[in-house]
Amino acid sequence: MKNLLHLIAIIALTIVTQIGGVVYVVTLITLQQVKSKSILKGSSLFIFLYFITTFLVTPILAPIFGREKIKETEFLEAHSFFYKLANRDYVKPELQQLLDNTSKAYAKSNKNIKLIHLDASFPFFDKFPLLPHLSHNDGKKIDISLIHQDDNAALTNRKKSVSGYGVFENSQLREYNQNLACQKRGFWQYDFPKYLSFGTINDDIIFSNSGTKNLISEILKDNNLSKLFIEPHLKSRLNLSNNKIRFHGCRAVRHDDHIHIQVK
Ligand SMILES: [Zn+2]
Image 1 (tube, helix red, strand yellow):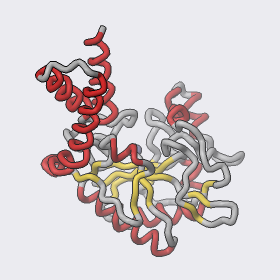
Image 2: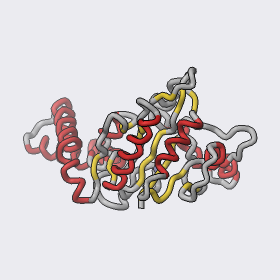
Image 3: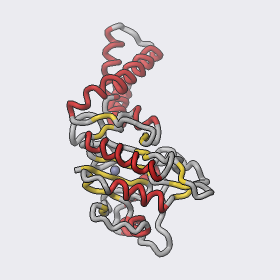
Image 4: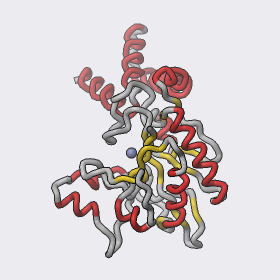
């Protein structure tokens, strides 16, 4: 029973953080060697080793795999500490460059408004999936938060979802409802992110058409961009026509809670 729980912990930590499972195994071996059965000592050692590995060791090793931990700036940051803690913020240098350039340019015309990112990739190994995403496995992809505005129509850095996912800017009456179309074709998973929001916050803010459109326009200027995914009703509402903006297909999940971009 105890071994089964350890196994579940190792698998869960590997799925969520990539390196957590290995750190867990190292912790178990160390405890065995010093013949300690204390849960408190075990947990403390795991947390200590996990922080050292995540914030000191992994950022040094990741470049061997062609990736780097996103460098935050006054214009660019993760939606929450979770993304950094769980090693879900690794990208290829070209993508870091795109994020840097875009966030700086965007802040120039939208003072104090940041580019806020969600899941990117893990630090090691191509094809190692970053669940629940299908394609975030090579350092070339990242999800970016939509832009919102407050009661006074001023842009804000606040978002509507605790996790950053799962609170949608739904299609309006006359707009094409891609979600419904995919559901009708049997792709039940298309609006699965609704279970991943971990709660709705900031009810006083709303989606900003112009703020989001300007951010996308800024992203499209980067020559390294290969594709950008956003839900079809938002593409037409924001009057976007660039051929790098594609529909991701019903096998993916809906993209009216975030923007997905990838570099060549
Ligand atoms: Zn994505």
